Length: 343
Image (cartoon, rainbow, N blue to C red; front, top):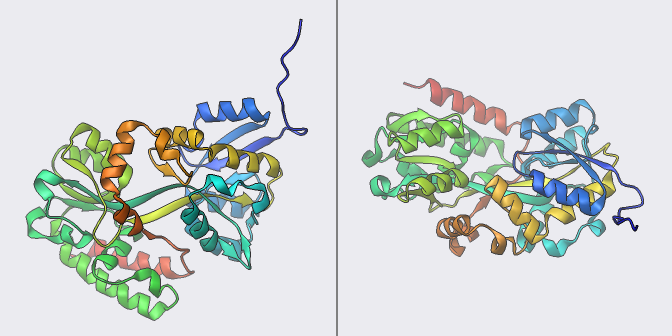
């Protein structure tokens, strides 16, 4: 009798992965474990919790984390919770080149790269086109045609989106706190003026989906995947990239400073960026990845919705979130509090 022997690394490690829901689906984990011999322990989290966990341990407890790319440079400069990426261990040919270069630039600290792109998506407009077809940009949510049937979050993407729609590039003002404060005052006045149009400020995705499905809300600022889910139920409803540009986020691969299974981490990165594997993650998470050519393997319905929402000109017009300088989020929070309290 002969025994089948799996080809495994000389040292098979356990990869402790700190990530978002859908980014490490069970079928992908099983394939990776069978192919490499490494084991995977998945801890689900979000940006705030990831930073808090890594701060509490000075970068320990995990071998690979997936914070958004605008949450790497600042925390690294302040807390030193990551280690640099060894680019020689990454198959760069698996990545969409423009997205790889943009993420490397946004996560570089003192000449070292700390992040690689994985899953990406956008904030924009979710519309019932039969009733809100005239809404083409964020500020159109203030139009009389949709009065009382609008919703958005009282969060920083709303401030950023309204600024772009008003002809101001807020990211260009990141280095000038006085100019940024002036921009925030302009946006605050617009949001207070727009307040009578707002049915409610949504807090969670399920809440917004219910409001749109019921017809109580016909125009909202929301994520692309939410619009695509609603489109599956009602073809009049979908995600639309605003005229001033959707707001783009990228969740990354980052190595915690005290991670102890770097070989397993690099193996996971190169494995999940393969187009056919990346498409499995897209099916689980609902968002596309930075994997070159993975859209060819995506489910047909999701691919069709993506292509309708994002013709090439809309992709080229995405405003990608850069790292947030220290202090700006406190200014934004004060503005959002005043908008909420305004009569």
